[in-house]
Length: 203
Image (tube, rainbow, N blue to C red):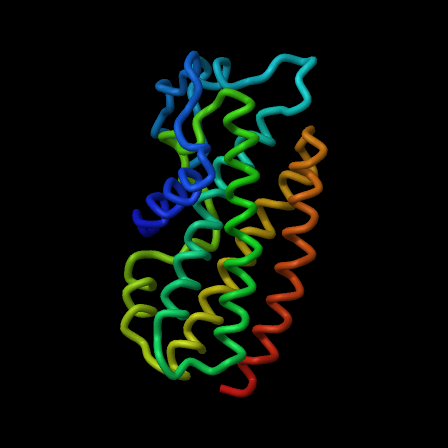
């Protein structure tokens, strides 16, 4: 996973005045035993009470989807900065950025209101579909149609990972807006996967 994706997430959240974590939050008990393992003390401090309108699934969904979305925005920026990219690819990159950047702001707002960190220590673990540093380097180096093809191949896997996380939220989440966002992500990204698979037949 590329560290700069987390910087992008933080910067996007900051642009909406939503960075940082509220006082009283404490997730310092994060363990390294597994990709999504959080120690009981950290889990307890992050777990809302039974009367809250959200649960731990909602928190994890937002905390993990923010950097996941941030990498999609980063990949879009890479493509949009290149010359001679086919119009279909630049239109797709623009559309992905236009959808996911505001969603980062929305999820950051939820986490702030829930008084939990936007970028916790465990963020970045267990997020399927993320492009590793080598993959981002290849995207940076590629040009023209080759870059467009690589972007779509990487973004298909990236979208598939986001859909997996969104489906987990649909099944386990409590916060109505978060569950609806997860449904919207599944609908939009399944359609974009179909579009990208169709476009790739022309490369």
